[in-house]
Amino acid sequence: MTERASLLIFGLGYCGRAVAALARAAGYRVAGTTRAGGPGALRFDDVAMPLAEATHLLITAAPEEGGGDPVLARYRAEIAAAPRLCWIGYLSSTGVYGDRGGEWVDETTAPRPASPRTERRVAAERAWQAFAGHCAVDVFRLAGIYGPGRSVFDDLRAGRARRIIKPEQVFSRIHRDDIADAVLAAMTNAPARGTRVFNLADDEPAASAAVIEEAARLLGLSPPPAIPFAAAAPTMSAMALSFWAENRRVRSEISKGALGLAWRYPSYREGLAAILAEETAKGRAEQGEIGGTR
Image (cartoon, rainbow, N blue to C red):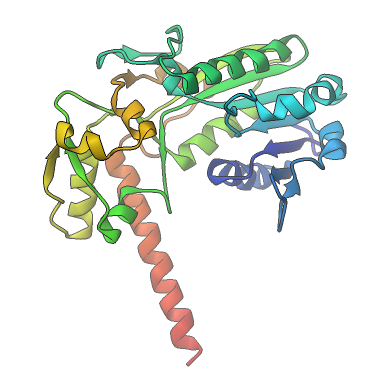
């Protein structure tokens, strides 16, 4: 990477902001969008100049129902003509693998989407991969995302957590900071052209109930009562039901090897402990600030 390398992120959300922070620390110039713009973000419709200057492009926005990929719908021609662009990263989902009955999938497994939502994901992946003759294109298939401010701790404290039991059902997860590490590693070690697929999932798929139980233990709380899935299902949203309808274990050894990474948080246990430590430190700092103003 040179001093002039410039990253444009379409979607400064939870993951986008984490990548932006790491990239700035690594010396990239970084700009990013939200729909309406605001402090530290450009309006989605006002990025023609940053796009023309970008060497790296990251897309975190999901495809829209009936509208396909929103970035390509608005900026396909500009991206194709961007003179300095050498890398495109697209954050997709491990949902593209569909239901595998609890079996393992890896980066060589062919997608088998089982819902309109994941079919749109596969279509978006392929649309972005069409740029691989012009620059490097990396597709990151993300497992369930969690991290500070987005974890089961929030639901436990609010009394919303439900310990749902569905025998043999597991989910794969990935901490936000491991996502950011992987994206930065891919950006800085990309080929000149071509496409790669990376699975971003930690090393231990686990039942939802097990994660809730560990979080409750860390908080010194009793876990919420167990609820059979059949009893919980009638109260679930269509989106939640679609997640629970699929059962797979996601491997990421190929991705970690290619990127030269070991996860900071190889399972939910390390990830939850780090989140709680960060929240505790933040709370103490805020209390100290309040105390110092009295």
